[in-house]
Length: 89
Length: 283
Image: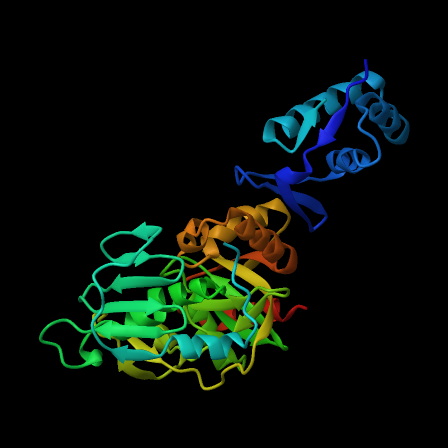
């Protein structure tokens, strides 16, 4: 079964700042900074929400193993959902 | 409530709202979101009482009413002016949709460069020294910003407040002593900035062994900005977190942040000042 991750668009205001995407959660006031691969994943979520498909793309584009990629994506997704910026469907 | 848009010249607005008349100040205001012994503030008015019991009342669009302590005949016998250009000035800016920074600033090639630090951190002395080197002085201690769109800094007519040693270091002449602060004087810069200027750089001052600068980028700016906001609780407590967050993000994306370390050493002050002038002249 596909793992789907959706941005919670209403949760934050965000802006690009010195090469980072900085987001503030509108309810908690906590902020979150995305850059590098994290920012890449966040931007890919605009095109699709299937995490396995995103993992396949990352393995191809970054030349990393599926196992390594899956662990990194899982960690990132946990941080993102815990902060309230995205939710697993 | 959203941040009030300021459609007119902020300098004109502040000059109008800072007008003072003597009168009776009420004991309390309605709907205060903050209320302690010295300050009660709502979204449209505040009462502020100084250490020497000078009482200020301000309401948006109506200017300031000031009540002197019993037995006092003149504003100049009190700490009126000290607080007029501090807490009162800052609170009026906040309530009119402007943002005050705890900063002194100078003009460099048509832009404003600001220095922020805790009290005693050297921002007034640094800006005064740079003014003596020919950079127009923008403001002392509180810098008012208009933030609708670009971040624009507003030069104001406040006098500088400098300790005796800072007067000596910067070569400025004391105009008159500050009541209730022995050893500190009002002074005026010979060269002052004219109209509003884009704020491009904010320097957080620190003590160091030598003059060094370090750029702050990305989310670190967001963590540091609140310490530069003057009486930050006013904006944060007005109940519109979203507008506050939009302001924080907009400010951080438009203004460069730096840590500026320098010695607090009178023997090297002049040489250090030249180094700082070179640093801030970088476009």
